[in-house]
Amino acid sequence: MSARPSAPAPPFARALAQLDRDETDWQNRLDQYSQAQAQTTDSAALQQLRQQLFTPQEQQRLAAAQAVRKLQPAPAPR
Image 1 (cartoon, one colour):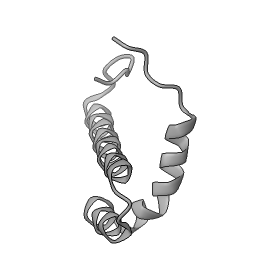
Image 2 (cartoon, one colour):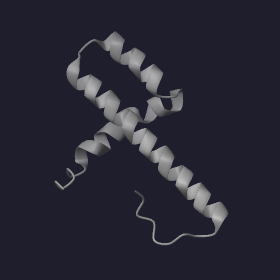
Image 3 (spheres, one colour):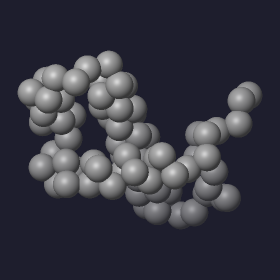
Image 4 (cartoon, one colour):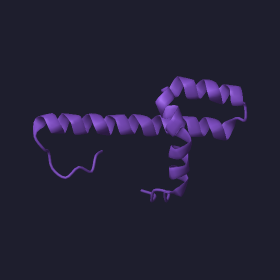
């Protein structure tokens, strides 16, 4: 589902494919956490979910990632 132009040399293609998988995984975990936030105000449950879904480094990026998402336009309906 990547919008990459053409297939570069195999080692680079594998690295780009892994990067795409990592980004998709990150976005899916952000979706899961955002949905949980919308459904509960239990801060202990949200903290536990943050620890389950994200590494300590990712937890530091979480608020910024959610803020960026709010600034992005919604995807067009298909």
